[in-house]
Image 1 (cartoon, protein in one colour):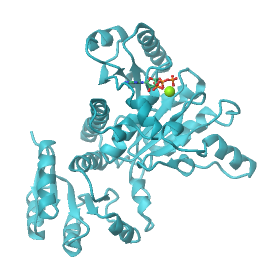
Image 2 (cartoon, rainbow, N blue to C red; image 1 turned 45 degrees about the vertical axis):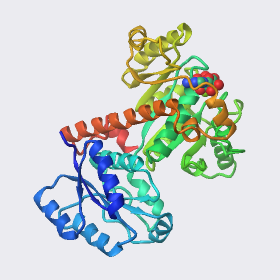
Image 3 (cartoon, rainbow, N blue to C red; image 1 turned 120 degrees about the horizontal axis):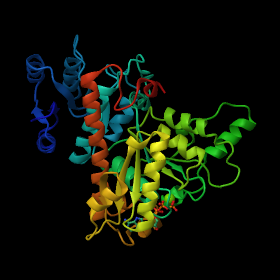
Image 4 (cartoon, protein in one colour; image 1 turned 90 degrees about the vertical axis):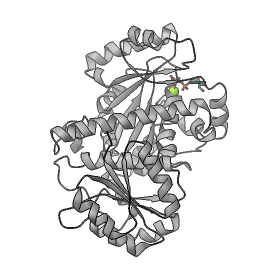
Length: 416
Ligand SMILES: Nc1ncnc2c1ncn2[C@@H]1O[C@H](COP(=O)(O)OP(=O)(O)OP(=O)(O)O)[C@@H](O)[C@H]1O
Ligand SMILES: [Mg+2]
C-alpha cells in the first residue's frame, strides 16, 4: 500500500531522482510543474504529507505553490530546497506560515532528502501535544528548530568495553550525516567519557565547567544547547564532564531536566553512558524513550545484559530496552542471544576491525570516514530502524489520540 502522497516541485533532473527515491520508499510521489497542477491535487485529495519546493531558481512560482499549501483551511508542510547562500538570505525572511516548514540545502543526496521527509511526517502528526502553540520564528532561521522534539535514545550496558561509545557515536553520525536529521550527542560517561577526543574536539566546555561558572556568577544554569560544541559534521556534542572528580553539580534531576529541555531543537538525542547504575544513570533511563543495550557475543556481556533487563524491570523501564548485537559476525545465533537475554535485537553491528581506531585518529566517526564499509551500513540500518519505529508509533498514536500523545510519550512527558 502506498504511503502518504508527497508533492515534488523541483527542477526537472532533480525531480526525477527525488521521485524515484520516494517511490522506492513507498510514498506516492507526485510531480508538479505548475501551480494549477498543485491546486488540482490539493482539491482532489487532502492527504498530501509534505510538498518539496525549489526555494531558489524559480522563487516566484514557489511562493505561489507555498500559498496554495497554506490556503484557507489547508496546512501542508513545505520543504524548501535551497543553496547555503540562499539560506542565509532567507534567514531574515518573514515567519513561516507552518511551524513544520523546513529548509534543505543543496547539494544533497536523495537518500538524505527522503529521511528528512520521514522526520517531517513524524513531526506533523506529533507536534500537537495539546500544550498550545509552539514558539514561532522571530526571523531567526534557527527558530525553525523549535518545532522539533527529539527522541531520547540512551546507550547502556553495565559491562565495560561492549561498544556503547562506538554505537552512540556512529548511530548519531548515521542519523545526522547520512539521514540529514538533527542530532545532539551527549557524553554522559562521567568517568571515562571520550566522545570529544574521538571526534577530535579539543578543550570543549563541559556542563560541569559551565554550571560551575554560572553558579559562581549567580546566573541561572545554561542550557545544553548553549554549552554544546558544534562538530564540523553537523553533530551537536555535549560533554557532561572531563573529570570524574567534582561532579556534584550534576544533580541527576537537573541533568535530566536539561536533557529533556534540549529535545526542542533536535530530532534525536543520543546519550552515551558510563557502565554503572548510578543515580544519574537511573535518571537518564527514566528520561529516555529508548535504551539500547549493545552486547558482544560472549558470556560476560550476555550476563550483564540479563542483569540490565532485571534492573530495568525493577526501575519500570523494561519496555524501553532493545539489544544491539555488536561484533556480530557470522556464526553468532542472534535468536539464541535474544532468548538468553530475553530482549529482542534491534540491529546487528559487525566487527569493523581497526576502522574505529583509524577514524578516531581523524576525529571522525566510521560512518563518515568509511561510508562504503559494511559496518557503516549496519549503523545506517540501526538508525533507520529507530526512525521507522518512531514513525509507526507516531502514526498509531495520531490515529488514537491525536492531540495528546507524542510518539509513545505521555502528555506529561511531552510538556517538558
Ligand atoms: N564492531 C566493532 N568492531 C571493531 N571494534 C569495535 C567494535 N565495537 C567496539 N569496538 C572497539 O572496542 C573498544 C571498546 O568499545 P567502546 O569504547 O565503544 O565500548 P564501551 O562499551 O563504550 O566501553 P566503556 O564501558 O569503557 O565505556 C574500542 O576500542 C572500540 O573501537
Ligand atoms: Mg564508553
